[in-house]
Image (cartoon, rainbow, N blue to C red; front, side, top):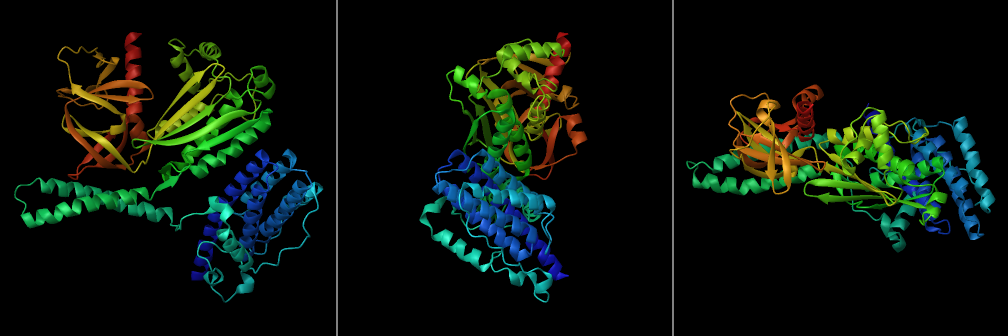
Length: 574
């Protein structure tokens, strides 16, 4: 029984590590496509392919081991071709990428002693046809891996000498040589430890309880009756608890680098489908984000990159006519900003055709008035597309709508800026983490609510002459211009008996709104507790938070409140 558990645990480690290696290989293939005269990407691929083959051999995954071996043969042929002044062409690059996809899809189903499927055999043969680029290295079949059955009587863990990295002796020696190679600094990494996400989540949950306890201790410190000795101990404990909580929360943060790099393939495949040439530039790989956001962020970037290729970057001939280089540029840039992560997706294409967007919106019965900035935001409307043809990449009018919905569901925002003939910029703002937010605590009637502090722009006393419409909305004159205001308690929270003493001006996606509240309590870090989707959508509440005194405060969903305010104002105007 324990052997089975050990085997499955090691298998999961192997799958996770193999996926990381495949992402690296994919990136190296794209490097080779951009720099076909360089041997460095080929050598990096050879190291990774050899390790991948060795790891598969340890587990007895014959199908993967043989496919990786054919991949090595192809790389040897490509290198020989390069030395004969015959660099790899796009067809060869396509075959190598196809092999990475096949290994990725085959790994989860691989079993000890399995054989290649007909599709894998055909791909292995296709890989070996790359020998046309030069004389491939001498063929030699991989040694028959030791399957689990042949190692019966030994624990699976006894076969693994390097925890989390199952390597055969020859791959182990190669890895040691790689570490000593000074020219391969990019592969150097600090020691890491693989931990199940569930364990980290449990630790974060405990850290959230610590945050609550810390708040109670701080309340105790304000008590005059507390003995001096106890006060000294508690004052020492508070910063330690704060540091421990912060460090624990940061355990969920992962670098954006692998996510950003994976979309080089997205850009390449979309460009090939549409007959365009694109180069994807990446910066900010070291910026970190909550693990819980990774999948949603990657999906949003997939749509944005494909949209940039389909609607932004022009065909090579058109770019030449406009005096641009034939290869279009798309940049992915991540940067930290005051408790948030900002991701820019920018292209140097033709920019948004605002007249076409306005015309299409009118055809669909959408309001298309306003200035150019407001018209540009219509690209996020469901069903709106200016594409004249339906393709595998674009044309259905659902991509950007789903991106906006996904980003806003994560308490983020997205905006677009464009200049005709110059290019388009999509800017995504996301919270650093959904586990903890710093919020402004406000009072409405007898209840306390949390407004995310990064959305707060200013707080002021309610002017005595502020006039409201019958729907609880009004206009407030500030130095920056007129800002709509909303009686938060009366219109959104269903509170009665409010005194409306203060206005909190919030901003989201370039729009400002004044929220009328009864009192300002102060800013505080709060641990977010999720609530049901139905409750969230019905009440403009993003989540719940346990406050320092142990009571629950509700976190306001500012984007949703802004939507409701706009709807109230529109209905009143009509």
